[in-house]
Length: 166
View (cartoon, rainbow, N blue to C red):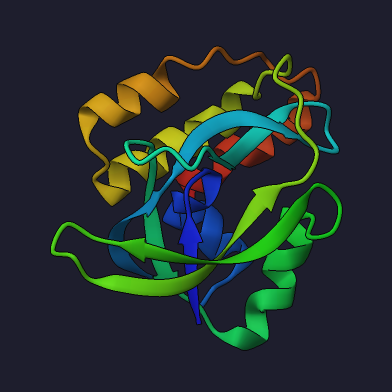
């Protein structure tokens, strides 16, 4: 099955730690949406959301993966499906005009005052680079986002270590 990732799951190390079968197909776009870091997470920080704007010029750029449907429940659990994220079917397209139907997650609980943890922003930046997102997009929608240090040092170390083992 096809999965459109636009946040931390763009990082292949992060996604394959959750869904070992995940294989990157390439960079795709979701029209009428804007990337925001405002999904309320159970850890008290902000996570990514593909926020629907319905504006023609808005788009979220992310990674399209193919995953084994048998592993999807693990991804649903990791993403908190039903606890802050809902699943949606979306049509995404690439630079050649190829359109694919995939599932993605969108936030159901948002707070524009929250900030992401630095380790989470790091996952998103690594994934954006791996996926080949345009530098201007990374600068405007990811790099410019203010993050905060996670007071849970062990969680932060575990999250950062994911990239040391890939």
